Structures are given as structure tokens and as C-alpha cells.
Image 1 (cartoon, rainbow, N blue to C red):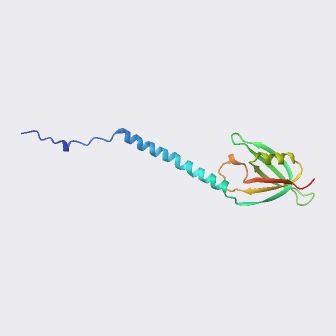
Image 2 (image 1 turned 90 degrees about the vertical axis):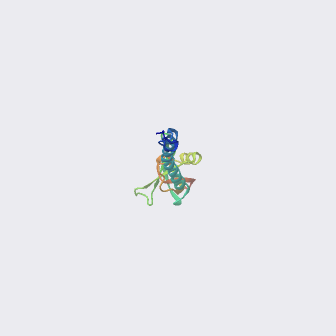
Image 3 (image 1 turned 180 degrees about the vertical axis):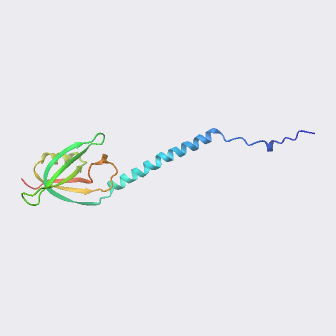
Length: 141
């Protein structure tokens, strides 16, 4: 009897290890990149879309630069409707250093702050409040 081994009936060879590693690398990158892109889009939309804008008048109570890595100016404006009543405190964030310097120079004085409200900003790295001051002018003595 003759040996009838046919090369076409040989057992299939396993896929090379490189293909398995490449597939695992693609899955790992997808698991890292997809959430990063989603968060970046969320931040871009939250900071690019203004929910509301307006002005608030009162006395600058405090302003300071805060943050471990992302430094922003954080402040408070005391708004009193009637003399002798407890003032309502308006907490705000300033991202522009020149506007913050003007507010700092007018600390304790009556000012009007122009602001944009950005809701849904995911971290406090961009500011501790959702109210971002875009302009300031002094209104009183």
C-alpha cells in the first residue's frame, strides 16, 4: 500500500501571533480613544454653547485665582436689592486675566458684570461655577 498523504489534507496552521496582537491593540485603542473623543466633544459643546447670558450688578466681595493645574479666577458679587437686607451672593468664574485684573481693581466697589452661562461643563478645571464673566464696568462710587 502506498502512502497517500495529501498536502491538502494537512491540519490547518494556527493564525500568526502578530494578528492576535494587532487585533488586541486595535480594541485597546478603541476603548481608550472613543471615551476621550466623547469627553472632548462634550467639553467643546458645553463651552461653545451659551445657555443664557446677562448682567448682574453689585459689589465685588472677593476674587482670587484658584486651581491645582487649571488656574481660573473665581469671585463673588454681593447683590443687595434694598438697603439693610441680606445680599444675595453671585458666584462667578473669569477665564480672561485682563477682565480679572479690572474686577480685582474694583474689589469692594459697585460694578456690573456681563456673563455667559454654560451648563454641563464636565469638570471644575474650566471653572468652579457655570457663570463665566465676559465683561465688567463700574457703575457706582
